[in-house]
Length: 321
Image 1 (cartoon, rainbow, N blue to C red):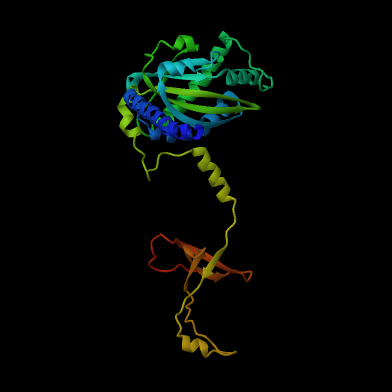
Image 2: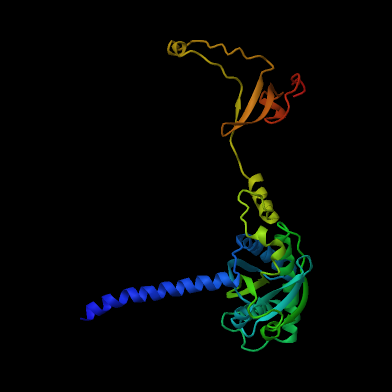
């Protein structure tokens, strides 16, 4: 009987789960949570830029990693904040709206320890409201984050952010309605052995002027770039070694003639003294030039043009080589 009862109850249980999922989907849709995939692209590219800004302009050697973008009502976001976090508000004039930032107490305390000459340790963040000195110190980091955010968003639309106030979660809770839908980008920050985080909170109504662009993935488009990463790649490439091959001449010969070759057979390639030489890398032509002999007896090549360059009207003399 127990087995029969379980069999009868299972469909009802599955039906309840299905209804809960449907209700959640309907609730999300009615709240206006439209995913903005380009935000993920922007914040993933912003993470290394912010780490570089912390290092160069705040003397904080950190690892910043984009965690995820979530969508939730403003009231739910504020309720779930670290009660000892430090928050900031900023105006976005081009969008006629405001955004918010929040740093959890782990990151705040670790940054203060490092900036005052200490060594932060995990689990030592105090459970107390931030002091005035801590707020003013974090103000500088907030400005760096806003600058990097503006730089990365400006690849899609013009944006500037002006820091307004540095407050606590309780004080910041009144700037938007509790049901205002927001996008929350969470960044994980590792400072020494401490793992904290900061979040960028943008109400969707603030993003109205650029929402259409943020909702579309620009597949195949070049969305800016990281200059520090390009410089790193360039330095690595310029220090690398490659093998190049000089091809003097090519000639098509019938297979019957090749099969008739014997030791001592002379092959006339009809190479002229001013024959152009092709310099190749991995089978791809990269340069053209003319060969000559130096005074020390070595063979040298004078480059006349690049593979994509114009063909000269007449070859240059190599007598000066």
